[in-house]
Image (cartoon, rainbow, N blue to C red):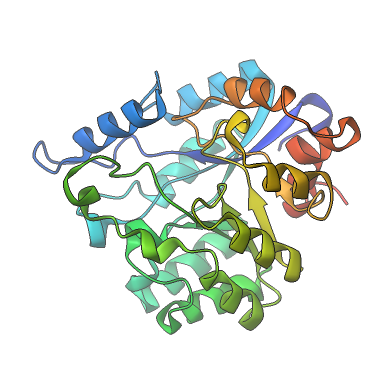
Length: 290
C-alpha cells in the first residue's frame, strides 16, 4: 500500500500500454512513435516495472492503467489481469485502474465486477475518442451503474488527443466524442459515481470547468499538458472554485512527472494550494485519506 507520508505527490494519470501491438503490421508502433514526436517524449513504451522504478526515484505515487480500444483500433489490449499482477509487485508506489471498452456490453460489466470484487480496483479509464462512443450513450449505462454501486471512479479522456495527431485522417480518431459536456449527462444520471475529466479539455476548456463546478461528483486531472501551457482561466479556477477538485496527472510516459512538477512550480498557483493539487485531492478521492 502507498504510504502517503513517504511520497510528495500522486500522479492520477499514467499509462501501461507496452504489449498493445501484437502484429508487425497493426500500426501500433507507428502510432506510438508519432505520439512521442508530438509530446517530445524520450521514453515511449516502458514496462510497468520500469515505470515503478522511475516513479519511486521521483518519490511520486501513480495511478496506472491500460486502454482497451481494441474493437475500434485493432490494437490488442493490455490485459487488466496482467496489469494487476505486475502492479502488485510495485504496490508501494503504483495504484491500478482498469480499462474495458463499454461496447463489450455484458462482458464488460461482468469483467468489471470481477475486477472490483476480487482485486479491489477503484477506477476505470475510458477514452471516448479511441473507443468510439459518446460518454452519454445509453449502451454504457449498465457499466456506470456498476461503478456507482461500488463507489468506483470513471476517468474519461476529454478534449483533443495526441493519439493520431498528424497522421492521415487522425488515424481514425474522432475528436467529437471527447467533448466534456457529454459527461454532464453522466454526472446527472449517476450522482454516486465519481468522474474525472482527464486533461485541460482543449478546445472545450470552459465546458469542462462548468461541469466540474456544477456537479459535485466531477473532477479534472491536469495531465497531458505542461502547466506552462495552461490557459489563464484554468489557473484561475485551480486557485479558487475548483481548488479541491483539480488533480495532478502527467500522462506518463509522454510527459514525465519531473517535467510536469517542475513546470507547475513556475505557474501562478497559491502556495497553500499546491500540496492539495499535487497530492491531497487525489488521496481523498482514492480513499487514502479523509
